[in-house]
Length: 368
Length: 107
Ligand SMILES: Cc1cc2nc3c(=O)[nH]c(=O)nc-3n(C[C@H](O)[C@H](O)[C@H](O)COP(=O)(O)OP(=O)(O)OC[C@H]3O[C@@H](n4cnc5c(N)ncnc54)[C@H](O)[C@@H]3O)c2cc1C
Ligand code: FES
Image (tube, rainbow over all chains, first blue to last red; front, side, top):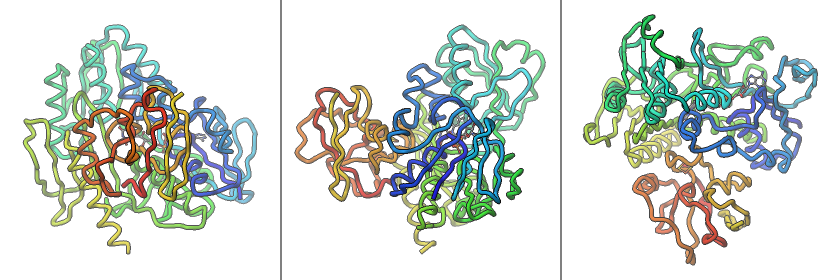
């Protein structure tokens, strides 16, 4: 056996690590196009951007780990093509790697706007961190998690910050209006201008000397598409995260899978999903395949707000609020009919862990 | 460097040198000690870095923050008096020789 992983992000790294943890002894290679070993992206809009940690502090594993665990790490050399008949991946440098199992963990890239910076990679974060050393009038386009977390750090550092969102509310894809409104109000209290349902005007733009776009990502699927694999938003995989080629898996931000939690085919952009899908695929390669059923969860830190979401709350038709939002500590339970879809917690970690457990137990019960 | 010992549920032990200032969680992750999942990377957001501090421990550990206490509220391996989140235990010379036990499950 010989496993090749394309994409040296959190999913790709974890796939190799999980293989070793599960006793796999054969060769494993991770191929990455960035020049740095796998790192965690969440700190890029949190501690790293704030200047509290450096690259070493965000690496998923220290550089020496890979050789010590027999993991080949090929960096700065993107995979250019997959030759499925030969079970071979060809890199831009011409290097060809044979595989018995291939894992696509190519992630996603930010949507871009002319004249706006993006925040996805440590290189992006380095540019922005540097830029925040001087006073800035920052304009953030898009009130999603990345944009709002950037806004929180920039504002905390004393910069002027405006957030413009085309939709009538913030975090529209991710949380209920109660939580979204609460988050926006906390930004406004700190002096961030938040313009919702707003067209980006030329004067607004002209006024800013730093423009950051946080308008979502697109999955990196070209490699899969060129290899003739089914792509529908992400690389389409089955319950075991296999593509239509039984020797090729897809995991993390680039994978589109059927989620019992969403009741639909989705892509998830979260560390939880990247890590749990990686472990699931490692087990599959080791011959103990189980369907992927992990409970989705997500967190975001803004100012002194700790947001934690368990389950997928999108599509709820009813909410129950536990606690008083004005206290800054509350949980919103989201239901569709009688079914609990999940919980969105603001500074209420107990509700989060409890609900995550409850969803996991329900899942086990329904699979068993 | 301070040495931290991680004991797996099956009794297998790893003794690891951990940089002062790194957490007990980071020490495990950087050295490939299994069973400490640490999905949030130390942000006290996930509760997947649960450990049991050895019962005979005499090393001084920091007070538990209310967030840590809440995250330990509903652990999948039962919470005990010696339960901690390992990302909230910064390693210092004083902790040299600390022994922690890795639970069966994290979520
Ligand atoms: C700023 C920011 C903050 C975030 N905050 C949170 C948070 O608080 N909580 C949370 O749960 N999630 C958060 N996320 C999301 C989380 O980081 C992602 O879901 C996770 O990193 C996905 O991992 P991945 O390995 O699937 O993809 P990626 O991390 O995108 O890694 C894929 C890698 O593959 C590379 N690649 C692509 N094509 C090729 C090719 N052909 N050859 C070689 N390499 C290739 C890419 O360049 C990239 O390095 C955040 C993301 C960002 C950007
Ligand atoms: S690593 Fe997430 S809570 Fe400790």
